[in-house]
Image 1 (cartoon, rainbow, N blue to C red):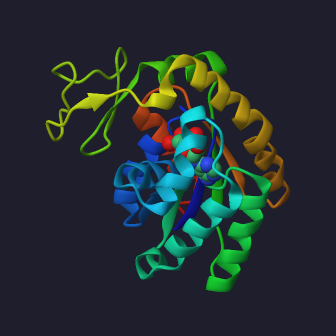
Image 2 (image 1 turned 60 degrees about the vertical axis):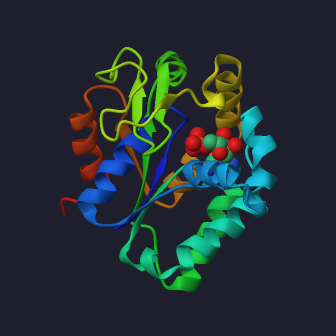
Length: 216
Ligand code: AMP
């Protein structure tokens, strides 16, 4: 199984990718998580990426493409993967196609999560994430049992710097300008499958399974 999840920030790609990667026994490769870990660890990648991320801008293509080339070439990626948050530009999509070709692999599907803009704003500004395990919560629609504490691991919940409203608006604009053109790119290549990204998490998961061809 080799699929990419495409959609604006807050569309629910990470939630679904986490569950389905476990179910399918493949890697969940979330570039945003990789970059946040690099920033926290203070690696060269993290130092390069930090200022772009803080503004809600995209990290330059050559940086992210280099990091993904390394990751996709690693042995554990041979069992399959869900790409979450990559590619985000046409240049990244072209680089991904080249990378996979070199590895003798192809993408099975690109799943687009369709969510309205008011809903994205609501989700992102209310999102809280566990610092320790990355589990996502929402202040009103999926709150933790104890405020500020992760149900799964007891870690501290925090609001991502880039989930504040002004940065969220910028991220949505960046998505419209730089990432939305990928919809046509993958549609033309007969890889795009759209799922409605609003509703119950389990119902969306069923739709993603079908869209990714996991039921064939
Ligand atoms: P995310 O967690 O996917 O919303 O990503 C958080 C931030 O990481 C984005 O706002 C970008 O600054 C950066 N980022 C993540 N993935 C990419 C990518 N594929 N290309 C460029 N920047 C990225």
